[in-house]
Image 1 (cartoon, rainbow, N blue to C red):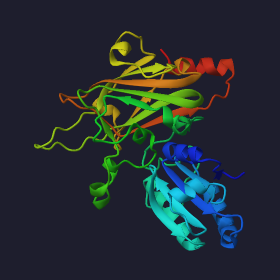
Image 2 (image 1 turned 90 degrees about the horizontal axis):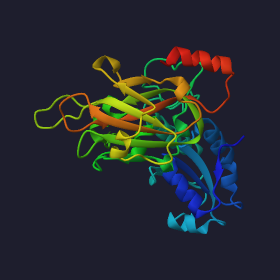
Image 3 (image 1 turned 135 degrees about the vertical axis):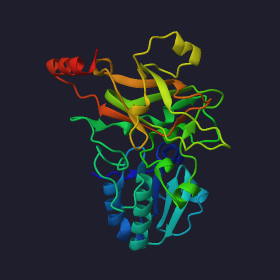
Image 4 (image 1 turned 180 degrees about the vertical axis):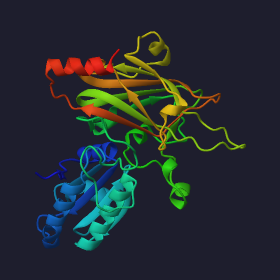
Length: 329
């Protein structure tokens, strides 16, 4: 089944540019012979590289979507444009299979954070090759179920990345070395007026959340700069319809509160938060309240968040109770 999205309106296209980190776009016409020639290759790339909310392949018929074609000054068919974070980063004019393939695979590999051009793999490992360790048996990375448009983050410094940065599966620049790290944008978030952060994550479907992983990569201490801290105390709230205010969160019992220590962070700067699984069934949203940081600074840094669980499949009651006994208290 094709994963390519046929664009039916300017709004649909605009929404995709906001919700998907990378959007590969084929501007074509039904009467265009070269468009038809290269179409099978485009579908092949779409089938192998598409990932929900991360990399999306779309087709825009220039005759029925003249407003979109005019906005991006498309005058020749086919024209392929690749958008990253809503901005055009690559353009391929004409039916050039080798160039199209090279450009798309290169960008996909960069998004994954590795040098390989082999594209994305299955749900359990795609986009996460920089992480260490295996997923809990029977569970998957379900971060792609986050409703990107509904994400909210309070008390974030606007000089750093947006909230969508946190659920990007690509390798953080904090783990990259050399020129790539030096020239990269600030793909992390830091708190602003104090050390607290409040994150709201709604989901596209009901989840059973088993584990959270958070990555924080403060740089080495520098005499000239204040080094941000890693999170220490995290309060987690489930199934709220909106983000909580800081004072409001203090008056509401958390579903679970976790305190991290230095030993909890692995070599990739990632800490695994084991949840009381029986309390995180039928989850439609999570609020993460970073209460304080591990140190004496005034700022906290977050690079990535990963959600591990399953998408709403029902479990047998006996199995569910057993899991609860193992992970709850």
